[in-house]
Length: 410
Image (cartoon, rainbow, N blue to C red; front, side):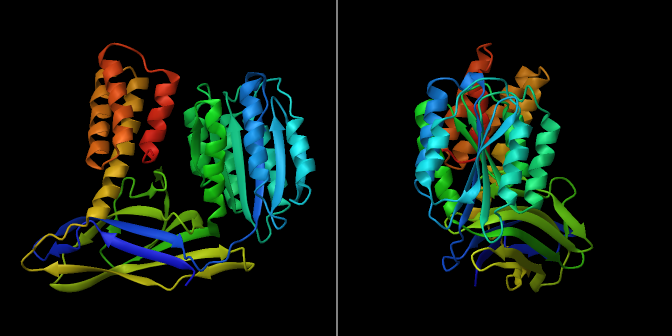
């Protein structure tokens, strides 16, 4: 099988006496170890605006060249540089003449403003010309606000990329980029958000992201959840991804069927989806709540619209109810709670409700501790201390908080 699909309920038992039962269903989906490694179709979209002058741009160019050196002749590469307008430095091509590609990177000079959407549009155009039977990934790096562009247009372009089976990853350099915009682009583009606080971190973060991209084996994946009669998704935010990062997801409903876009499937890191379900009163015994199935493309073999075997979802219905709580699912619930608590705290801070923000950040810090994410707990608790002392959170504090909310910090 090409897909490794596993599921578990937050509590695998329900009582016969209860009219309505709420359970969280955790679904883990990864490409199997036996899946073929597809060639890459990689595009760097690099900010060369005036604020990148000196060490930032020099370090980013070095990080990009390190990645170029790891490409194989089967892979494809394109490079866009943008300030207030975009320029195609390297048109989409096979990664054969690496020295010439690195020379083009070396030639990038800083100057001008920032137009993220022009860079995205040019990058998507280059990726489109080489996406056939490849894993298409765009890496967008910027250090500033989209002052010469339009954020709504940038988000629409990320949606366009997904429609063409491309993944958009964003990297924020320094402390002056807009975390809302870059997170929304990455979430819409089914990619990841990275924070490069200091120039010396760029190479390590680029390398880590590239290793993740290399582990992609299957693309354009969707999870289909077929629910039994009477079982339904919760009305409010019923589906979220909790690993490798937390993202609120949208389920497309057709009767008893819900379809959720997953994007790329990696060999080394499963996507973990959490669904909030309501289950009706049932008779004692083993009840089938529905089934799960994944559709996907296999670019390594040039195959599209492949399907995994359907997997039944079952729960034990008991006259004498004994809870059977799954610790792993509880961890996933905590990860989602940490994200949502932090989001509420940020919203309260924006609206001027400092005390409300402190309360929610403290809840998020406690949740992080409960799930064993000590590094995130430290970041969140430091913010609580700052706000209680009457201080404002710095741009660095806000960005660390956003990353801490979405992932388990290393």
